[in-house]
Image 1 (cartoon, chains in turn brown, blue):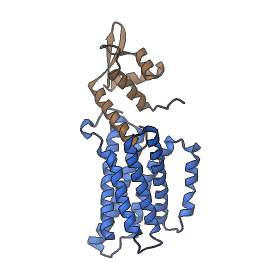
Image 2: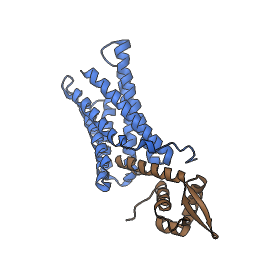
Image 3: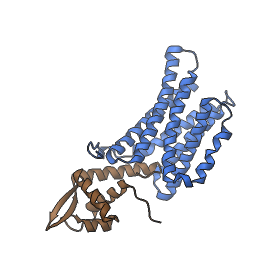
Image 4: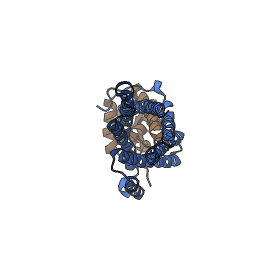
Length: 95
Length: 214
């Protein structure tokens, strides 16, 4: 059975992909993120928009197509996300 | 001896609850996670409950000097702690999908057997025991799934608090026995075990994010 992912966990997966698993230096395309983060196109669009507006991701215009890179704020958020995932795990819970 | 142990227990409970509550709140502010919000409410309630009882003992010691803490203050403190234990158990019940959990339904019947008196304090203590025992078992089951060593410590902590609560409640049957001091020592041990995983969170790498979640 597929593991249920909370909204925050999906955000964590997207940020982790843009930090650790980039296609090239320009960033990750939406298609690549959909595949890596295992999420539908309709859902990822709104999440990416939010993450860019919050300053966690940077949108890069690359020859007519948009690519996404993690920002410094995104890296800090991801670090906090991992720390608190571990914290919640200690209580037997998922964030 | 009992007075000293009560003071240590309530002060440690207040500080540990506050530390875990603050950590959960920082996590909630940084991630917006509802789980961390529930943990924040849980541990701030537990901390406040211990603080109320500790204040009661201080008032008794320095103001009223009657030799006994006001019963209503003790009951109020235990009731507030029970709210905290409820939120810990509630977080687990959400995770375990409450309507399908026959286990939770079965332990829900337990208070009827445990409560032998109509006194509120007895009711709160027995409810606390059930919630803590449930939290301890669920946390241990989570450890078996994700192998996070911190979960062992939290599970032992909640288990000790449950045992301490049970012995504290049972000591009403044998008032002058060693049961009550033993329950307090076990509860102090439980609180320390709860604090261990929190002390390992890398605080220096975490900061408040004022904008996220707006």
